[in-house]
Amino acid sequence: MKKFVLITMVVLVILSCLIAYRCSQPDYLKRYDDPLTYSQAMKETDIDFPLPTSSSEIYHGVYADWQAYTRIVRFTAPVEDCISHVDRVIEWNNGIHGRKSSLPRVEVSHVDRQGAGWLEPAGWFTPETITNGLYIGDSTKSGPEMWIDLDKGIFYFSD
Image 1 (cartoon, rainbow, N blue to C red):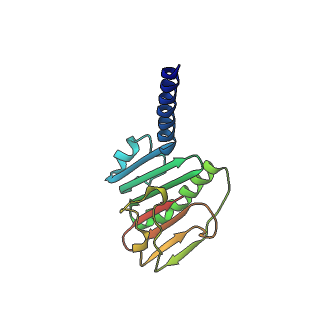
Image 2: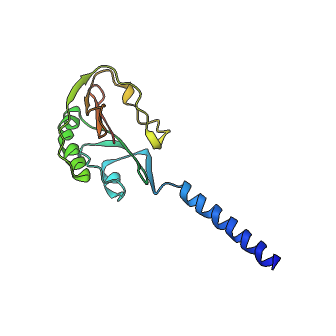
Image 3: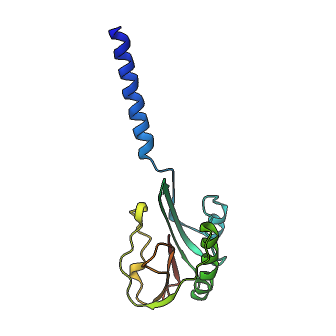
């Protein structure tokens, strides 16, 4: 009887450890920390973010776990393409979340450090380096935010 109780306790401890380990892992985590070309990014089924065909140096990361969610994206493209692509990204994001939102666009000369949320560290997500750019979003509400570096043609997205 003592042997049975001991074996049962050992099994329960092992199962508890396995469950705790599984619960400590995110439901979904995929990141591309090395820059991709447009054609490489299009081959990745995990990248569903809309990208302009002129984009290059593409970085992408998604973290999802129960109610926690972070997506960050960065790509380089001609400034005109970055600006004109904003409406496509808003349309895509609205479709995912079932909403209709328009976001204000503001010229910026300084951006506070944004961080990458659950995807830290992400040394490639640096909208704070912008000194001449556009901010698209509403920092007082939850939802997508975008920054465009008008000097370097770099597009940043966070949601």
